[in-house]
Amino acid sequence: MEDSIGGSSSNDNNIIKEQDRLLPIANVGRLMKQILPQNAKISKEAKETMQECVSEFISFVTSEASEKCRKERRKTVNGDDICWALATLGFDDYAEPMRRKSRTKIQEASTNQNDLC
Amino acid sequence: MKPFLSNHTDSMYNCSQVGCSHPMAHTSYPCGDPYFGSSIVAYGPQAINQQMVPQMLGLASTRIALPVDLAEDGPIYVNAKQYHGILRRRQSRAKLEAQNKLIKSRKPYLHESRHRHALNRVRGSGGRFLSAKQLPQSNAELVTDAYQKKDASEAENHPSSTGENASITFTAISALTSMSSNSVNFPNMAGSSQCSGGLTFGAGALQCTSVGR
Image (tube, one colour):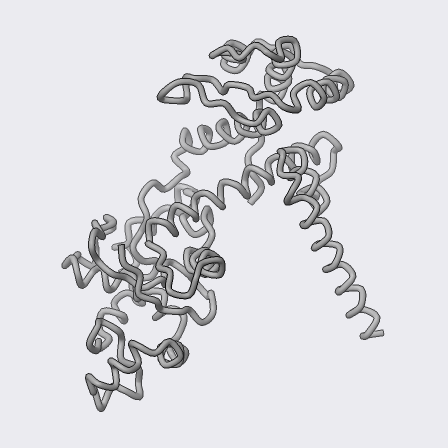
């Protein structure tokens, strides 16, 4: 019964499945809805297009950060590398809020650690 | 998944060198030959680092034209900072397509059993699924109230499992277009209404909102 799905045999050919390449469309739709007014509608085609755009953007920024790690002979891409890649690619307006947000998360984790001790 | 790295990184820096030597010249093929030719002498890491600084300073406010072979109509000017990244991503995508690793069409559903289960569920007026509470009564007025009120709609969707909600969109499409359950082709959805469930696995409680084109 599972063989009736066209993509079920893709695991043998090591094909990258759709759910591995793209973000979930429901989550993308929910994020898009947050910024829109209450009675706005979002077409399915818009969500699919946004799925492609945001997934490509993630690969674009991660590729830049990974290239930096390759030059410095490091294996792990961390948050600072992503912020550096955003600044390098010209997204300076996003790099600074991301840096502050990641720093806040580190402080939150540290606070939780202190509470446990 | 870590993105595939380009094997022609040195040719990228050769493009950078061309850009530095002619900062104001916006030719159609600034890096055509070095990009497609593989006989480029590799630079040392120190030489590459030296080229980065003039690139940042000299090309702060200029735009470089991408190779036209990949563009259909005319040159496409992009941010100079993103030039190498775009070329790298193009090579990665071309590599994946060469290996036939990308699926072009989207599948309407992921799991056959969940799809069949959704097909067997009872629908009320407006095409919404009836929950377990509403199933014996099957009152049209009650379903209409649940359809109009947002809170009632959320309460209706909450008892359902994630997999069932994930199949709502394509079940409606399948019912509307009389599509065969074994068909993988994506139907034409002009004028049809669907829910915003989509292909989500384990995404928690999903909201089912009517979306029209």
